[in-house]
Structures are given as C-alpha cells and as structure tokens.
Length: 252
Length: 252
Image 1 (cartoon, each protein chain N blue to C red):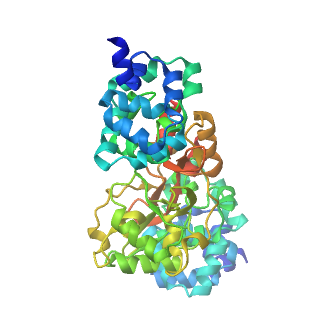
Image 2 (cartoon, chains in turn orange, red; image 1 turned 45 degrees about the vertical axis):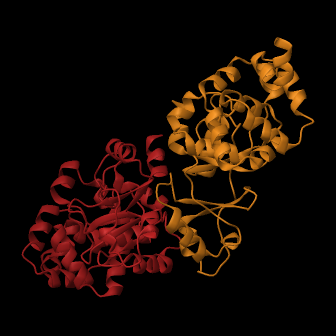
Image 3 (cartoon, each protein chain N blue to C red; image 1 turned 180 degrees about the vertical axis):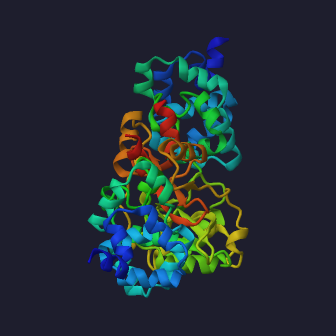
C-alpha cells in the first residue's frame, strides 16, 4: 500500500519523508514546464517546499510557466506555516547545500504580499540569515526604465509614486529586473526634460546585497551618506530597498 | 582737543571708549535713515559694532536705507576681526542686555558670505551661543512663494536648485521672509501641476529656532524623522537650514 502511494505520488512521499536530497535529484532532470505541472498537482503545503528546493534558474522558469492564480497559490504556500516549519527544521548544512536564493521576481512578490512585521516573523522564508539586509527590505520603491527621458520618468513617478517608502531616490531597472542605476529625484527635476535618465549627472550607483550583514549595510549608509539603499540578489536583480531607519533599528 | 573730537565724532568716541550703554542711548532717538548716514560716515571697523547695538527692528530698517555697496561694507564690517573682538570682550550680561538677534535678512546675507568653517570660527558673529542651531545653519536651501502652483514651484527649483544643501525639502517663504510651510519635493512632483503649493497634502511644518540648543534640535530630527530642518529667528523669519549630518557632528 505504501509502495503504491509512493509510486503514484513519489514527490509527495519524498516531502512527507523529508528526503530532501532525493527530492532534489528527482526534480533535477525535469523540464520547468513539467515542474510547473507537479507544483499545480501538489497540495498547497507541498508546493512551496518543492519550489524552494529548485535551483534558482529552474525555479524562475517554473514560476513563469505557472498561470497567475497558481503563482498566487505558490506564494501563499511559501509563506505557509507548515512550509516555513519544514524549512526551519533543516540543518544549517542542508540549508546551505539545498537552498539557493529565490528568484528575484518571486522574492519581490512575497515582499509585496507580506508586511514588514510578517516578514520578520516568517524568519527563514526568504532564505536570508538573521541580521542581513534581506530581512529588512521593503518593495515599496519607485523605479523607472533606463531608456526613459527625465520628463517620462517624472510622469511615471507621478502615476506610481504614492505610498512609496521614499521618492528621494529613484531606481533605474532594466526589462530583466536588474538594477542599473539610482538617481536622486532632485537631479531628475533639475535635468532638462528630454535628457535620458542614464545621462543625468548623479552620484554613482550604490547597492547592497540581500545577504549583506548589518555591519556592511551600516557602513554603506555612512560611507555614501544615503537615507535609502537598494537591495539586490547576488546577480544584481532588484529585490527591495532598505531605509536608514531600518538600519538604525537593526543597530539597536 | 579731546572734547572737540567728541563733539565732532561722539559716536566714534563712544566706540573707542567701549561705552556701549551710552552709544545705544545716543542711537535710540535717531531715525533709521540718519543711522544709515552715521554708518556710512564711520570707518569700517566701527560700522559693525554700531549696527549690532541697534534694536533689531531699527537695525533692519537702517540696513534697508543703505545703498547696496554700503550694505556690503557693513557685512564686511560685521565679519571683521576687530568687530568680532569687541563683541567677544563684552561681558555675558552686557551681551544679553545690549545685543538682540540680528535682522533675518542681514543674517542670511552673512551666511551667504561666509562658509561654514568661517562661521564656526567667527564665533559670536551672529550672536548665537555655542552649540545652538544658529552656529550650524547654511543658507543653501531651496525656497518658493506661497502663491505658486506646483508647476511654477518646480520651474523655480529647476532654475535655482543647483548647489543647494538638499532639494528633498522645499521651503515656502512669504514676501516678508517668513517661513510659512515646508514641502517635500516628492509631494511637489506628485501634486497636480495647477495645485497651489500651500494646498499640497504634506506633513506639518517643523522648524527650529537659531537659539535652540543641540539637544532640542536632535530631538526635532528624531521626532519628525527629517534629514533637514529649517532654522528661523524668534519671529519665524527664515535664516537657513540645518541638516542631520550637521546635528550628528554637533552630537560628537
């Protein structure tokens, strides 16, 4: 009987048995669209853990194959108590070995879904260790595309800027989601209307990684005299911003 | 001989004799335009000390009667080593008794003339005690008029905003020089082009007095979570701004 269930539903069995290595091996050869099908078939509690075990590149592609409502289910699953518990109970070695950083677009969606208090409670949810930038970032930042003029950028900020954590810094993000520049709103306002946002005279881009620890984030704030800093994954994809208030909270 | 000089030049004699009370009494009944004439007649070293002994209201009016080049002479005199020395050697009682806050427009001109290092060196020049906001303010702020639209305000900022200490906060100053509001640049950008700058939804005005001590300035920064605060004289006339960096320097 147990065998039959295993044969019919090996993925679910591997989750139930906490057989993470085997589960990862079972998923490895599968095509992202097939993995998307597996995720759809699994109960909500299982979806999230499967997704977290995927290598980042494959996770990103599988996520893209999911229809919007299933993407929503997956995000719910990732913030689900049971999934968090499963991730929490992994040994630190297993965690390092098995879990890569999540795809940036999924992290951003999760950040949008959870408020900062929930995020801090959902400790290992994003996979970032305690006292790292990833634990404190917010997705409420204003961004523009690199091919925009100053006038177009100001229009976009006018339309989307309400409720952002700060508008003093605007982030230039390419179509793939990579952070390519940061621009002071003041310099956008001072620039001639038709100038390209990438050509505006402005301090160099400064960013931190989500995995950066408290000390290096504090140093970046001090060194570059900023009130907000963008946070990226280790490939430079934009995840969120962290404000100086958040860092001062960290420092307490 | 001495009597003759005194009769011909009693003001100069009173300065030479450090007879501050008598000098003040001699100036009191005079019309501001006559005081302006006296200031023009006196040597540079004396101009500043006469001006400093005038009650603020009369000083402001006398200053307005001076032609531009004489206003410049007076400002030079106020930052002159000898005048500063005379002010420095007054007893604290005399200083309290004799010296009122300078007219806001003169303070602003002096701030524009001296860089922050000079200002800190010219210790008693502005009459503000050590460790008060007046010692750390800068005149490099962006300002607009209360009757402007958001679009007109942004135009003015575009034309005048270069080289300001910050453009994140814009100060609304009336024709008399009073600070009436502060507006985030972000909210100016978000506002409909035709809305009046005074009608923009924005946090309440927060300002400090030039005579406020370090502790209350620090408290204001913390309580209102600002990176810059406007500094006024005790009647609310705009003098300059103080940035959070300056306060952190104070705190060291």
